[in-house]
Length: 181
Image 1 (cartoon, helix red, strand yellow):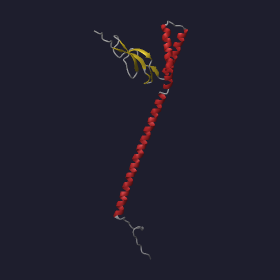
Image 2 (cartoon, one colour; image 1 turned 90 degrees about the horizontal axis):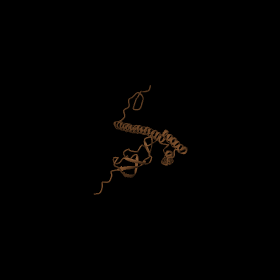
Image 3 (cartoon, rainbow, N blue to C red; image 1 turned 120 degrees about the vertical axis):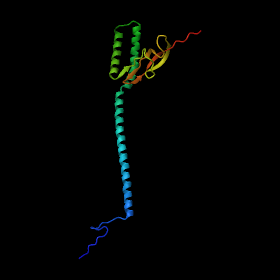
Image 4 (cartoon, one colour; image 1 turned 90 degrees about the vertical axis):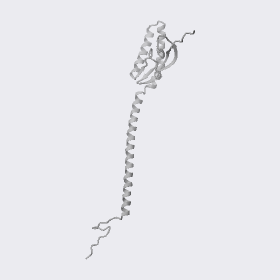
């Protein structure tokens, strides 16, 4: 018969690691847990950054689509200005014939098409000067209007949705000069 001896590492016995080895294992486990937590935190931060990136890209895409017609509209504005000048000259000359009516209809069609795409005129005449909407190119003394009021619109300004596409070029009022004594 054989004797049943159980020693460390053999079935039936309880093996105990030396205290130094146990401390080393606990330290290693703790270091690995810290590393795991650091990588988990990094993964969460990366996921949050990616979600923010996706949201920002979506917002940028919406903005890009909203204002995509801006360059085309800006290119059309000089032609619209020329139609307006032609109508002003025709009216000053007293011409209300078919040609003037036709030019007026074309101007109205262009303004309507631009309006459907979010491009609208900046109403400036008689309004207080706003450097966000207006470009002052002249100053005129005025007793009738308070200082810094738009007296004359030299070139229409336009908005595309809520942004200035082109500021209105205007003449603004200034106080009249005091008479010399």
